[in-house]
Image 1 (cartoon, rainbow, N blue to C red):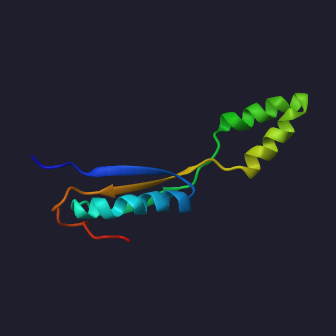
Image 2 (image 1 turned 135 degrees about the vertical axis):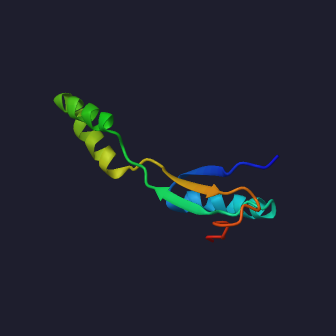
Image 3 (image 1 turned 90 degrees about the horizontal axis):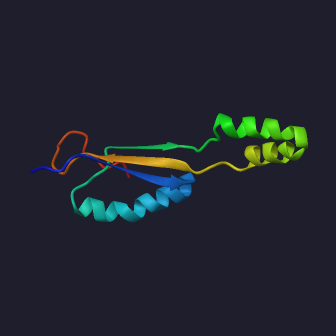
Length: 95
C-alpha cells in the first residue's frame, strides 16, 4: 500500500508559519516527504467584520472597531504540499 500525497497547513505570520514548517521539514525529509509546492496566503478580515463595524458606528464604538480592523491583521496560512515518497517528478526540495 502506498502513501497518499500530504498537505500541511501552518498558521501565523509569514515568519511564524515558516519557522513552524522548518521545524517539521527535517523529520519529513528523513521519511522521504519532500515539498513540491508551498504557498502563503496572508490573513484578511471577512465582510461581516466590516458590516458589524459599520453598524456599530451608530453608537460610536464602530470607529474603534474600524481602526482595529485596519491595524490588526488575522493570521495567514502557509500550505506545503508533498507528494508520496518515491513519486518521482515534482519531488524537488524548494528550501
